[in-house]
Length: 122
Image 1 (cartoon, rainbow, N blue to C red):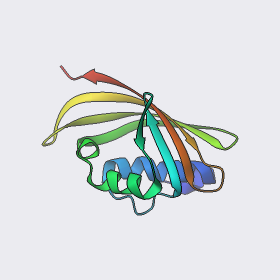
Image 2 (cartoon, rainbow, N blue to C red):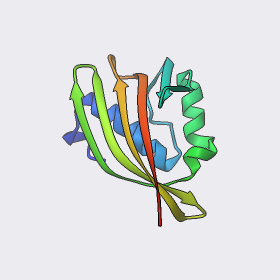
Image 3 (tube, rainbow, N blue to C red):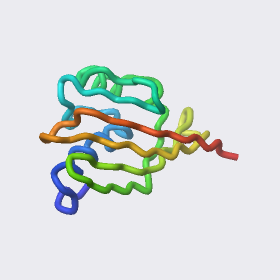
Image 4 (cartoon, one colour):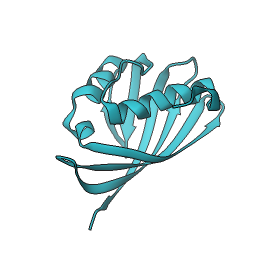
């Protein structure tokens, strides 16, 4: 990641995206009461809980690669669009189209609203 091409809010979001693939959440800057909602379902209820999930949860461990990352910023919100290739034992099984809206008012992620769409590999 080249921090110089991103705004400070976008850097915070890139740290999260990078952690999805690396499973190392040490650089991710969550607010303590951060929350994540995916396709209408709450999947994260605290910053520490989301950090732990990024490092240990099986559904993040299935991520093989993240690509085609696009970031846009509107006020305190950063919108990230990207593709995730996921699979088992290094074998790609599906691609997930992701759009996440990050509320980053003070240099930490307070809220993530995610929409995911799956596409099976053939």
